[in-house]
Length: 185
Image (cartoon, rainbow, N blue to C red; front, side, top):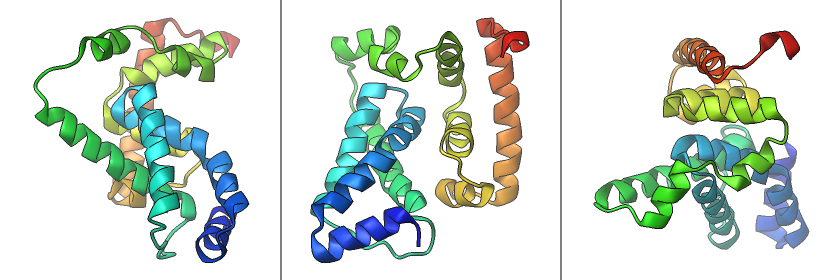
């Protein structure tokens, strides 16, 4: 049993608030970056991450234990993000505040990428297809295996490996377009 599952069990069964705080500490940053890859907006990703933890803390859904705790948690976040995207699709107008935010780089997002190369990678990632962003984030930033990623994205392992190959190729092309210097990395 991984630590997240053990912390969640302690929280669910014994009401151990410190165990819930550990879950948030361990998974917040990775979940936020993963959700940003889906919704393309760091502020919204942070809100969805908070919503995920609120859902976990209030409804206390049962982890069926079929996979890793992180996979289960990210699936909850992913479902919230997809629900939000569907709601946004139904809305016809985009508030001016949101339009300005999507046009300019998000200061919060840039705080995650303090080095210039990190900023270039994030900019290049934003230019990729959402599915490419998602697979790269899960595999490289969150360290998930192809099997875990396949379960998360509801695809076969072979599809994930193919998608990962195409995503890396697209990222390399986007990085070259951004002026990324491979010689100095």
